[in-house]
Image (cartoon, rainbow, N blue to C red; front, side, top):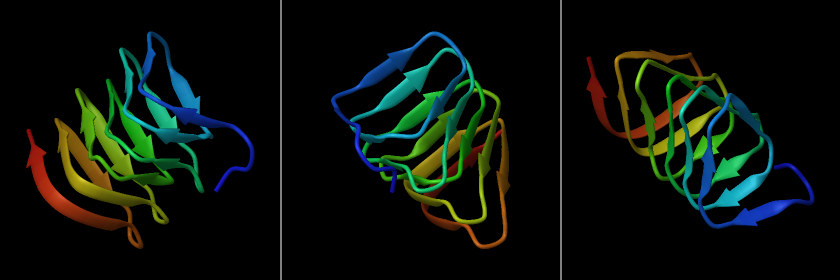
Length: 98
């Protein structure tokens, strides 16, 4: 897990974002979001395209593609137009693709 900065509360963005800090809340963006390896998001992650390399405990939603990387952990569920789950990823929840 990244050391240092923690965000307590929801994060709303209007640009592409790389999240490398612990967030105790939801992360939403109008654009792409990458959650880096070792990063934990206690809430949901939503963006146009989403790549989870760390952990998302409140689910993931992408208006385009969602990718769950090989060391990622996603709980609750995933909603996307296109989905890629890499070997080694941990996913627990409901899927909605299409």
